Length: 185
Image (cartoon, rainbow, N blue to C red; front, side, top):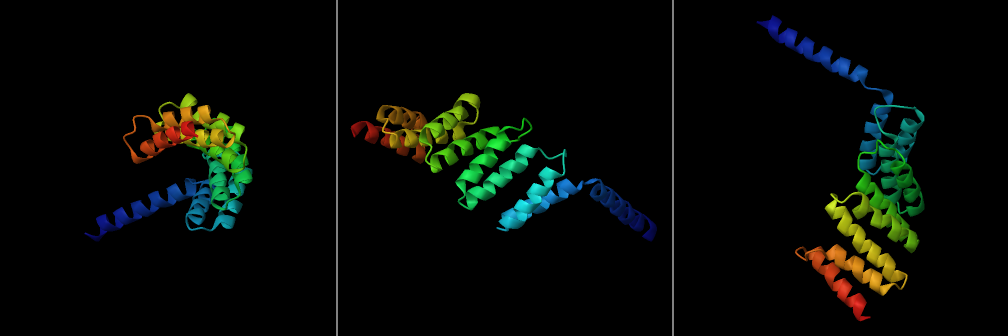
């Protein structure tokens, strides 16, 4: 009776050991960096993410690593570095979440005060990724804000209307009110 149980335990341990041995150092560093980042250990996470990038080709897309680095810089309020990291992420064709990363490029451009660039980058989201509905409407909203800051009221109102869509959600209703308010100014 002990033999089948012992055999199962031994098989499990061998299988687990093989999967751990097959995991590359880059994958382990990436996973550890993700844990550090989630716990707020940003400096430790940045060190590990950079190690993953310097390790050379791996199963992890460089774009995904740059995206994570951008997220850390964003959380730290370092928008110029976040923007640079998100741009590097977009340069990688293996990047997992392109619409979201494109949005962050546009939003960081807005945050650093590059309003014309922000509009251009934000409008790429609904144009290039029409299926990314939430990212598209959010992008239209921030394109409206950037346009408004540039004094382009008609353009801002148009983007707010597009962000508002059918007006069913609270956010959509807010965007529609914003469109009406901008036109009234």
